Amino acid sequence: MKKYMVTEKSETENNGAYPINASSAKQIKSILKASKLPHILLVMSDKDFSDYLREALSSFYQVTLLEEPDKVYSFACQRGPDTIIIDEIVNGTYGNDLCIQIKSNTEMSDTPIVLLLNKNISENYLTYINSGADRLELRTVSIYALQADIQILIKKRIAQQNKIKELLSDTTLANHPEDDIKDDENAQFLRKVEKFLEKNLSTEKYNVDILGLDMGMSRTGFYNKMKEITGKPPANYMLTYKMAKARAYLLEQSYSIGEISTMLGYCDAKYFSKKFKDFYHVSPTRLLKNTLG
View 1 (spheres, one colour):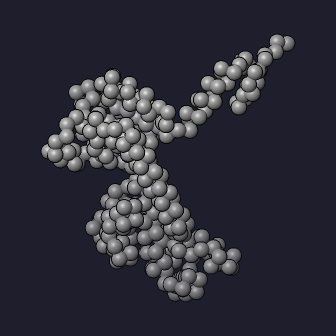
View 2: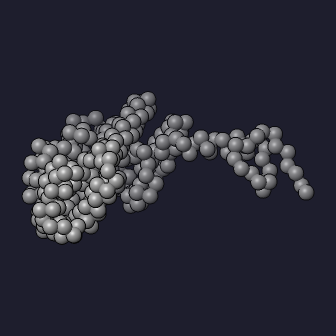
């Protein structure tokens, strides 16, 4: 059986299929290292400029160049780059329009975008104020300043994502930690209640009377049982459940306020926003802004 000499130990599984020498092992290490770097998508058609940026940034990031503006949206959604750098004009398409297109997608809206401009004119900046770009920089910006921009944007995005995860994990559906419910029978009872609430979340006229019937209890019996376990009337418990759901949906940033109101069984977004403000003492949009900045 043929054997291969390995001059440098490989960090990947070889299984004897291919010979590994020092050069190929070094390449494998380089590929593995690169795969862990943040991914930067360059959207530009100026070859000299893009070559310069690729060379300058490749030591710190995975860098992909895309010259076709019509493919930016689909590519960004599929690959999920950590930052996108867009030139002011890419093959006849304004970078401003590309920014708006990317930011309009809920899955991509938090992806940082640096929009590069050709001229240092005040009016030029105002033109792009509604583009959604996170940074406006001149094409002549120092490469070190650009690297700093990218690092700041990536760190800010990671911090925001971690904050959302933390807030979502802290959002208990009906604010009753398991440690507060010692009795297994009571815990099973509440799980059954929440199962019905979840099933009928979008049902507009689902109320305490119907929930009590679903639980197989009289109105009085259900009221007393809920008050005994949770310390609050069932109507308050139902509202707390829905508002916790609303808060979680908001923080996910995947749905509009109108969509959330429908998902929670409210007749319209205006009424939902009023109920939300009554509960949290802040409007949905203000809570989102205060929480995520």
